[in-house]
Image 1 (cartoon, helix red, strand yellow):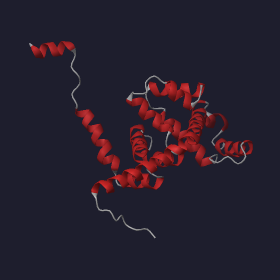
Image 2 (tube, helix red, strand yellow):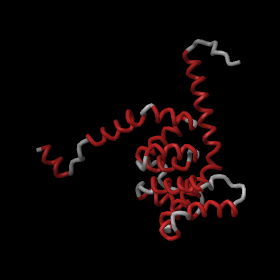
Image 3 (cartoon, helix red, strand yellow):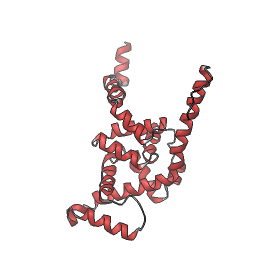
Image 4 (cartoon, helix red, strand yellow):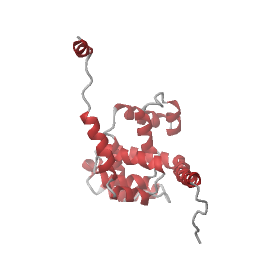
Length: 211
């Protein structure tokens, strides 16, 4: 039977919350190594479907056939259903919108491995690096939830990727926060704030201002 916390000190309560958050984060991190390479496989599968024009070449029913054939070749491997393969396509299309740095990161992962790419990438302190690497650091089930919600909006997707990593959200918690309209409150506010910032002045304009 669960009992309430008996120590009423605020520092203790905050410490308990910190421990709980740390544990949740560790659960996501524990899955990263087994999860990340699978995520990259899904990325590449989606890329192949798009870049090889698979459906145009062999017809729309090819995805169902592909599902059957992959399950024969990879007996016992999960995630090869028709619906999941379509998610792989959506996964690629969603994040392929990201900047050139992401394309370089993906190319490096493909030529070596995810771990090596993360170790050898020079821009580790770059905000884009931290954000884009996060794509390969949350469970696939979370991605499917996010893809269903964002409808192709990469900025919105990355917002929830960051939040999931930072807060250690389970899939049900992610769904709950999506349902509360979190992005509409926080994400859009950030976007609108950036849009309202004035354009940086050129050196010539600054000189004119100072005259």
